[in-house]
Amino acid sequence: MKFDPLVLIYALPLLALWGYSALRARRRSEQARAVLEDNRQAGLIEPASLHPVIDPALCLGCAACARACPEKKIIGIIDGKAALIEPTMCVGHGACAAACPTDAITLVFGTATRGVDIPLLTPEFETTVPAIFIAGELGGMGLIKNAVEQGRQAIAAIAQRVRQVPDAPGVIDVLIVGCGPAGISASLGALERKLSLETVDQSSLGGTVAHFPRGKVVMTAPARLPIIGEVKFGEISKEALLTFWEEVIAKTGLKPRFEEQVTAVTREDPYFRITTSKGEYRAKTVLLAIGRRGTPRPLNVPGEDLGKVVYRLIDPEQYAGQSVLVVGGGDSALEAAIRIAEQPGTRVTISYRGQAYARARKKNREGLQAMVKQGRVAELLESTVERIDPASVTIRCRDSLATIDNDAVIICAGGLLPTEFLNAAGIRSEAKFGTA
Ligand SMILES: Cc1cc2nc3c(=O)[nH]c(=O)nc-3n(C[C@H](O)[C@H](O)[C@H](O)COP(=O)(O)OP(=O)(O)OC[C@H]3O[C@@H](n4cnc5c(N)ncnc54)[C@H](O)[C@@H]3O)c2cc1C
Image 1 (tube, rainbow, N blue to C red):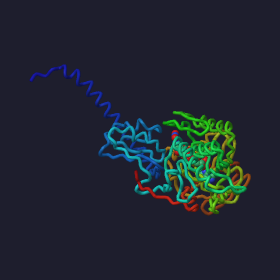
Image 2: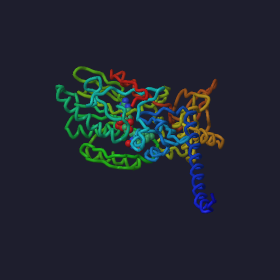
Image 3: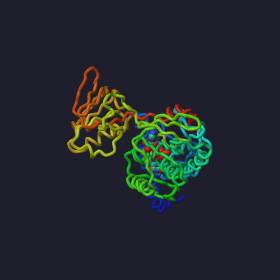
Image 4: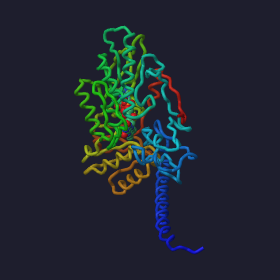
């Protein structure tokens, strides 16, 4: 058979294109593997709530899931198969499962090694303790739209329940715990239905999204807020979303109480006594809209109640020119130390009880080491904070005690999960180990 040179003219560009795509796919695969490995080493492999599990036998490696994910870069393609490479950053949009052409993705709670406790709820969002309801992420489903929807539906059920309990002086219809999307929606629902209510939040308005350093928030579907109507954002900045919530509060006259933590809910038939960090309430019903991110873990040291102590970094610029102590060894602590050290005139000390930052991403470990080398951060490993005073902090560093000048303390020592809170209130949960 005679060789036709025309074949070469067509084949060579095709071959070059194939080679280029193969090379690109290999580079992407290596990058994705490196991210996954970094997260494995840092122990960041357990997703917080609903997340995808990918069946490699069905996965074609087409990357439709990775492209569909609003968070981006959470799913990577390794050796031609999709993999969850940033598990802890998955917030449960579920867009990956919807986009998969071969149904290779199942959305599950928990993993085989780490169960996630999901409270047992009726379809009306009532817990196993009658008249205590749950809405939002605490019930298992993440996302703002779900929280808003559940807050609205839970209040409809609460309104029915309230009618069955006799009125009494000083007893309100509903106490709403949490002022994130679920709590706001429920509070508006209660206003709309003319229920007597109080809303308390241990922190400020807006819930989880408000507390995380994050630029963009994505709402993949609209949600309907009582009194306000349909809200449809698509993509919105965190700041714009917070402004929106503030406008909603101002417009409706809702009066949430901030910086007030609910510490106990006790049944006193036919009512509840709710104990908070500032006082007590009595209510016919309780709605827990406290999310799943928990309460910052305190150090329990003298002086921790001083106003200069906070549990998360909100605005690094406010620390310019100050002496700041960051406590902790995870990503939040390292990021806080780095970002504050970037501000002019700051003197940053990081104190961590461990020998190394085993639970932080490589990027942050390297960033911190660079700051330490430049003398912009003083690092105290194997150290613990002994006390906090108005103008100083005292730190035990192995066998010696050091007192250093200090203007502000940021404690990033992890969170206490709401499980204990639920247990104490008698609410039963079910542990899910990778269950759909
Ligand atoms: C980094 C990150 C990014 C995200 N991005 C998106 C996104 O782009 N789009 C999206 O739809 N979702 C996103 N989510 C998920 C979304 O933030 C949550 O699903 C949603 O905020 C849940 O709302 P919620 O009202 O149930 O709880 P939360 O928003 O968690 O609010 C709970 C509130 O309860 C308060 N609270 C807790 N315990 C107590 C107590 N004992 N006493 C008083 N108050 C208490 C807390 O201070 C908090 O304000 C993201 C989550 C994270 C962590």
